[in-house]
Amino acid sequence: QVQLVESGGGLVQPGGSLRLSCAASGSIVGLSTMAWYRQAPGKQRDLVATITRSGSTNYVDSVKGRFTISRDNAKNTVDLQMNSLKPEDTALYYCRAQGSAGGWYWGQGTQVTVSS
Image (cartoon, rainbow, N blue to C red; front, side, top):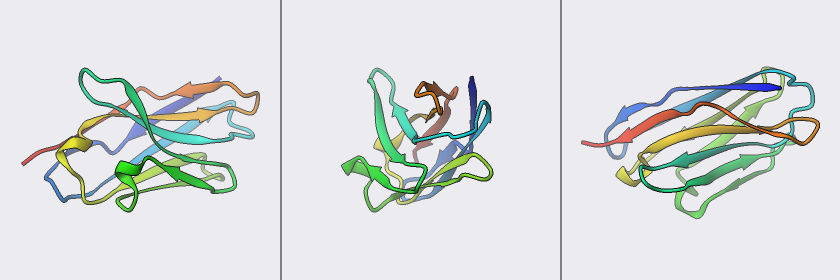
């Protein structure tokens, strides 16, 4: 089992920045791909960005150039730096990680609200 705990959410004005962090614990040896998802009220949970163990990244088009995903394999953490935030970025942000046996795990989520 892998436990994921997100932090760093909050209220920010449009154009502002936030940095989300996710810390993994438990059966963390050989953690593979890690990712951030988000779910706005009344909508489905959507992928935001992924990062492989070797550092290859992918982003959904709507956040390219604004968000940056990074990870520290030694600390078993994955971060999401979010710049130039827009009201439409408001959502509950979830961390997800793939364990060495292939199973996927979710964090409990952290709220990001972009509003003036």
